[in-house]
Image (cartoon, rainbow, N blue to C red; front, side, top):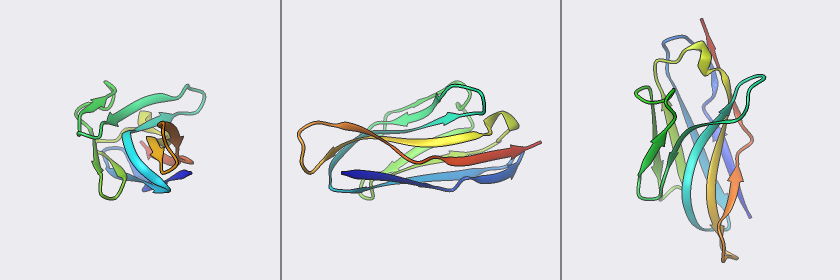
Length: 121
C-alpha cells in the first residue's frame, strides 16, 4: 500500500505565495504521474497541474504563469509553488499520484487527504 501526505496549505493575503508539498510513502516500486487538483466550495474537483516522471507538465489555464509544479523522484515528492494568489484560488487542494506498489504489477491512483488554501482579499 501507499499513502500521500500533503503539507503547506494555509491562509494568505491576495498577491501572496504558498508552496504545497506532497510525499508518497509506503511499499512503493514506482511513481508515474503526479499532480494537484482542487475543489472550491460548491464546485467540482478540477485539475490544477500534473507532472510526468520525465518532468513533462500540464497546467490548467487558471494556473498558467502563476503556479509551478515540480517533483523530486528520489523523495517521491511533488511540489506546487503558487504565486500571485487571489481569492478565486481558495479551495481544498488534493495531491494525486499514480503508483505501483512493491506487490505490482499495475499502477493505481492514490489521493492525499487534502490541504486547505484560503486567500483573503
